[in-house]
Length: 151
Image 1 (tube, rainbow, N blue to C red):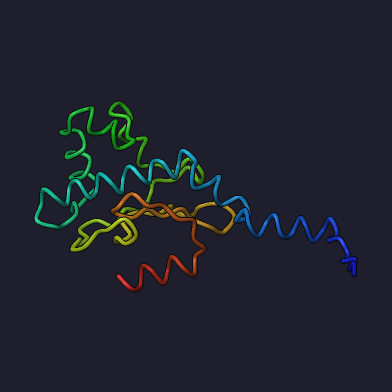
Image 2: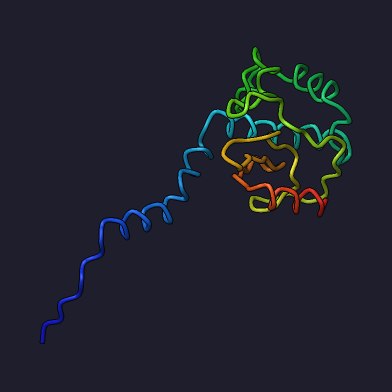
């Protein structure tokens, strides 16, 4: 016995494609802005490792630490040693990142770490956020506010 099933319409296929693609989010997670946040997260953790688990108290303290690192350390973490100031600005909203200074970091794993930075306004109602393990996510404002409140 042969059963003929209806083929999905083009609009159904388009909806499925968007659902599985994350609506373009994967492109944002590989963007230059996401790479900046990855670098900030990893280098924030580098700072924490040298300061008894506490993050930098200010942007000035963090940048001073970064400028004191060997170029190969910055490069290997995705930060251009000649463009440290530029690394603190989002290419998506053209605003400085919001960095959460003074965070106490007690545990970091490949899947879990504290939030350390995020875009100020982001794009299309979503903001890239960076964690101390170098992970980056694209979140809506509700989810970001929940993370910040849980801090």
